[in-house]
Image (tube, rainbow, N blue to C red; front, side, top):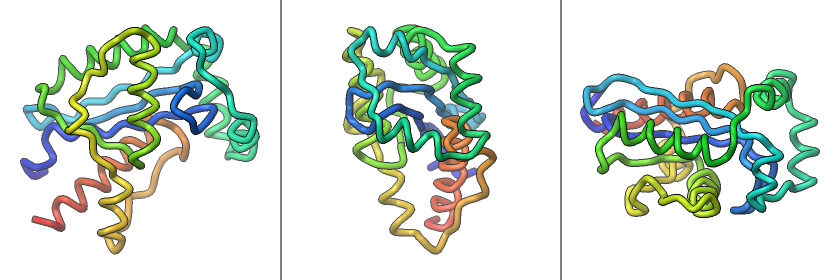
Length: 180
């Protein structure tokens, strides 16, 4: 692992919509802390609690989930069995970030207009400060399109927030190595 990979946090969320106020089903994140150790975070959010905060469910996205593989669908069902309140997950995530990374960490997601903005909106809906600096937000989709010849590792379960975040971080690290 190169020094550039330290304090890059990759985040992925699974949702029931694509708008900034959609229901978040789960938050997965991983990154290398200041000491170079891989840290991970994964929690599920109760759908009913998200609805109480005014989050929305999109019918097209719900139907999309029904067409996904068994593993992805079961992650939702099993996740709801151990889901937490929206504000609890956001507090846990903010604490995980503060415990493992300096305030200079870079937060990445696979798309500039999806994971990070939806999460930031959820923090605001819950009356909490967004726990990262907006100028440290990065779009992994842009980087991987520039380095499209560097192929990603095979993912464990598609549409599992932690598996997707881990896969994206591994892919980012392959790109960083190739750039060095």
